[in-house]
Structures are given as structure tokens and as C-alpha cells.
Length: 295
Image (cartoon, rainbow, N blue to C red; front, side):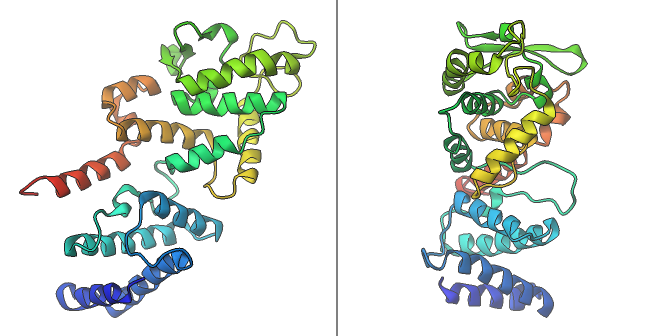
């Protein structure tokens, strides 16, 4: 890392911002820890969103509290804001990161690299592995709730038009499109996996089965995700809500309109969808500030 930039930033905080000695000491420690993490790979001051997520995952692995992680993100966001203003970097990767001090609020989001790592970690040589891949692919492809997922029957999946019929909260029904990779995983599971798991329960209508051949439960899905996390140590804690949040955030970041995402998620009000949009707001702000001539 170029320590000269850190030195200039500290001087900026002291002279122009009048920041306290205690705060400056914390900022300096947090910035140094961030660059020490990448020291063996690069001394470049420019870092991507994916690399930032990798660092935050390491903080989680080191058992840092939510409050401590939020403080570090705040310090590093300020540092990169300064670097961006000085022309030392082309973007502020921390503008896409939102960490709450409290336990409430939105769950974290997988980077695309992380979600791909999750898919790649699944062994599909056995029937349950085929089910696991189809299950995770469908959750990410559609953003449906885990309760909606375990309630799905085979008849709810229409492979001809590529949709699933979902019975949501308040008896609200909706049709959700299924992506090509999720359909591929589903077809492989239905053809080569589900018949082997079904065993003697030949009348079971459930789309996703547990290892006994009955309908998988909400808790069963969470157990599957916990086991997958053991095989994928480089990503954050997995939960159905994290996958749902990742679906919504990735859709919004790629240009999907808010109303469409709201309908896909099965939200009756826009306020429910709003909690998924914090990363998008940061991205739009970043694009605006870097693009508008009078921003």
C-alpha cells in the first residue's frame, strides 16, 4: 500500500476536518488492517467491490462484531471518498456496502463471485446433491421465500413456459419466471435425482424432498444451507433470506425496475421492497456523482 496516501488523508482529517485524535487513531488502524489483508497480493490502492466483500467476510470469520465492522466500513468509505476526490482511484467500492450497527435491518448480499462459488461447491454426483443445486438455483433465480419454496408441488413447475406458480402470503398467488440455469438444475434433479429420493412415497406431490422421500421443511432447507457453508469457507453465512436479498439486489443493480422486483418478491407494498434497495441507491449515487457535470 502507498502509505503516502494514508498520511495525506490523516493530514486532511486533522487540518481540514478537525477530527479528534482518538478518531484519527481508529481510522489509521482500520485502513492499515484493510491493506494488510491484501499485502501479499498487491500494494495497489485501487480495490473492487468483490475484494471489499472478501475483506468483510474475513472480519466475520475473525468474529468481529457488527458494530466494529460498521465502523471499519465507515472509515474506509471516507478514505476512498478522499482518494476518489484526489483522483487516486476510479471508484469508491465502499459505496456499495451497507452494514447496520444493529441486528435488525436487511441481511447482507452475496457478490456474484460468491454466489457462483456456492453453486460450484455442490457435489451433484448423488441424488441429494442434485436436489441441493436445484433448490439453491431456484431460490436465487426467483427470490421466493423459503416457506413458498417448500410448499411447491411438481405441478407448480411449468417447464414449457419456464415458470413456477407460487402461493404467497395472504393467499396471494403469482407466477415467477425461472432462469435457464435453474431450469437446467431442476430438470436434472427431477429426472435423475428425485426418483431416487422418492423411495416408497410414490404419491408425494412435493417438488423438493427430504432424504426420507417426504416434503422438505423450512428447517430442512436451513440445514442444507448450513452444510453447504461448511464446504464454502470463503463466503458469508448462508440463509434463505440472504439468497432472497441477493436476488433482489442483483436484479435492481442490473437495471430491473422497482415495481417488477416488488411483484417478483410477492410484496404487497413498496416499503417491503425498499429494504432491498440500499445497495442500488449507493450505486446510483456513485454513478450520478461521477457522471453528472454539476454533481
